[in-house]
Length: 101
Image (cartoon, rainbow, N blue to C red; front, side, top):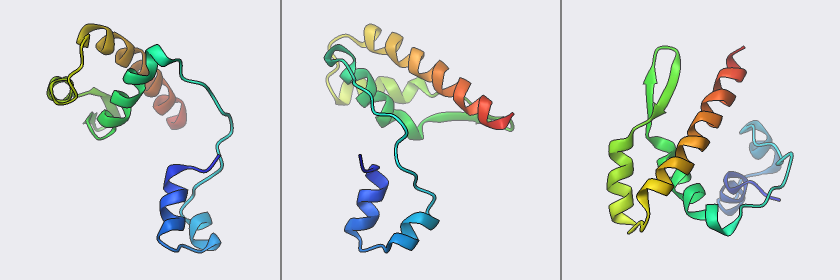
């Protein structure tokens, strides 16, 4: 499985050495996203630039941006999407904090 960033670098003509220097590593595990969760995963990826930051690092997502994205992408059930997104957010924050230790 090729990382999207790796595919982009290859499309731009990057050499193997440049890709390696970019720190892109092959995916360790493959996983399946159930159809009912796909909209949540897509929105999480859209929100990846919307982290609120403190001096200690990310503290959570900016939900004002989420409201705008839900309207832009015509989300039918924003409450369910928010609940799923919060699960992903808490998990991501936990992973960020593990990297610091």
